[in-house]
Each structure stands twice: as structure tokens, then as C-alpha cells.
Image (cartoon, rainbow, N blue to C red; front, top):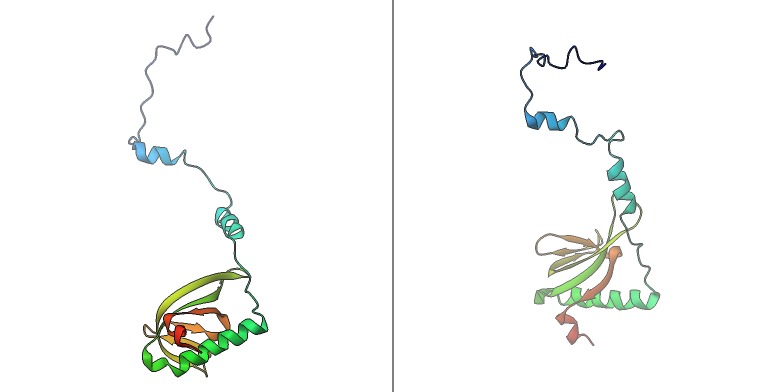
Length: 138
């Protein structure tokens, strides 16, 4: 009647291999990703970058005035906050960063500001310069 009646009461066969640990056994049921790196690509594509802001001529003149004032008063060890654009290494666009510190020098040849901690910010990437030193600016 029952097609398994002849084997239902037999003992389970013994394996010649040692039993697998539960930890190793669980790896058999771990998710499998057939497309390696696909999730990272999706996250990278979804990451938002900003476009570089083009300053108006008036804004460029104000910025240049502040940089010249900074150059003339560099001996006062000015602390400034610079907002600048950092291009993204993986896709078009980038992000805006702020750095606060004391200016060591303005490198006209390299076209960058050099801070005391040797951080360099390129002049073409700067959109805003702020600091207490500019209160004295006429």
C-alpha cells in the first residue's frame, strides 16, 4: 500500500565524511550575486554631484578684491573660511567643501592658496572667502 513501507524503518545511512559545522553549512544558503559589483555601480550612479557654479563678473571682482586684500595682509596671519569646488573623480560634477584655517601664502604661479597645514586650494575653484580680516577692508 505505502510505496516506502519497505524502507521506512531503516536507519539513516552513515556518511564517510566528517559532519560540516553549522557556520559552514549556513554559507550554502547565503545570497548569491551573479553580477559582481552591480550594487556598487547602482549606488555610484545614484550618488548626486553638483555642477560648478559660474560666478558673475561682479562676484569675480569682489572675490579678487578679497584675495588681493588677503595677499597684502598675509603678515597678520589671517584665519579665513574658503568655500571651494572639488571635482568628483568618478563622474562629472563634484561637491563644494569649506575649509577654515590660516593662510601661509598665495601662490600666483601655482594659482592656489596655501594654508599653514600645507593644504592647497586652487584659485579657480574658490567661490567664497570669509573671515574677520575683511572687516577692516575699505
